[in-house]
Image 1 (cartoon, rainbow, N blue to C red):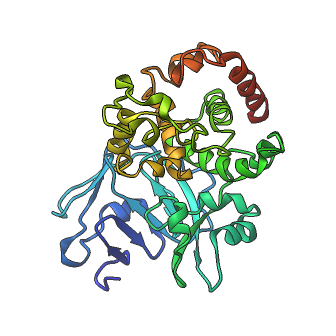
Image 2 (tube, helix red, strand yellow; image 1 turned 135 degrees about the vertical axis):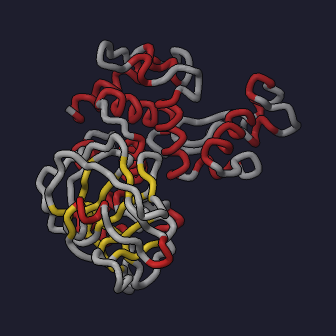
Length: 339
């Protein structure tokens, strides 16, 4: 904390932390923190929801993003119309979504796991995927296994828009053990991707259920030799067929697809294709691929939008019209639960 800063601001390269209550106008005109690392904060075209404020929470975190930037000059000024409520410690200002959410910190104790914390603090162990790190992102399975005693994690104080228990209750008992792991990860990725259309969410879940039985088979059962020599899949080297057989919740196949997702995710899936089966990676590929149209060139928005709900032709997002009616029926079931 800087003794010369009236706001008690401490600065690191990514975040500004507030250690006391402050009015937003005071925050925007604050004097620079140590080494002039923080001047005035300039915000353009930003709308915030301050419903139910003030919130009983403990830290303000202001992430830098494409919508915000921090001036080093200390000479900039900013108008912030129609917002005059005090910001209290504990509010999380999320400039990516334009909403004001609340979190509460939790200090990792000896023997803690995210599963246990979610059970004790959030009422459902599967909500561990909603627990955040200091940078506002959620934990991967690998990170969740390497918690440090004394580490701060952040628990959401608002409820998820999804009734996870109700969704899981609808799943066939034969795949429920897999759904208990995969559906929370998929829903968390859906939230992070900003997808709110319930019909689109239903179709994502239906696709994962059909393609991999919600993670029961995150790697194709066949040996993959049927893909050998398939130049349309980019399989141009000996052994590419089995090496790049279907993996993940949506079963990506072929060297070209593994290279594409390596580039998108910044993960080397070409030299380590087995990583496409990792649940957190598989969830990102499933949701982002269906949302962006990466698999076949058409996306969720092309078939499921404000003017149409075409679960049958939405199959074209992944694989022509293969089993289109079957998957559409599964999506209808999920949609009834979600609504």
